[in-house]
Length: 129
Image (cartoon, rainbow, N blue to C red; front, side, top):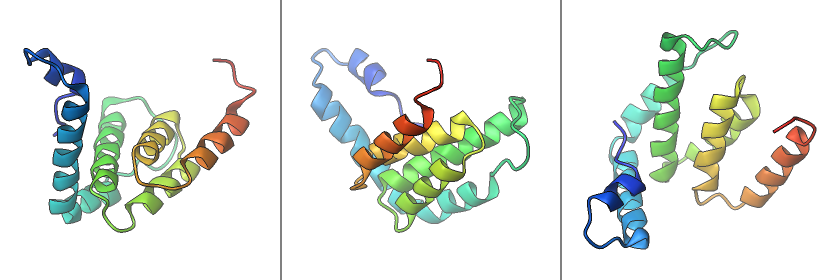
């Protein structure tokens, strides 16, 4: 359900144009996000993993699918998607969900990216790397 990564696409080309690869990949992701918005939103809403964090395959798979849905919704600029990502960033019960929300926001049209990064840096500054 994910598109090939930019590096893999580049490996398949005789001449690599990273900007063109990124642009084309983002166009396809955006179109998939928009055209399947209802389905992605349903996946996002039905694949939450409430309760304590578990690295078990079931909950991990649910998180991965939910985070993928979020990325497509945000990339597709679906109405309300950036707010979903902001909410997930704040309410995340684990690093996986927080990182996915952050990645979606940083790669989005959100205007408060710098503020988000500063807030997270302040929140986590005392944690060892």
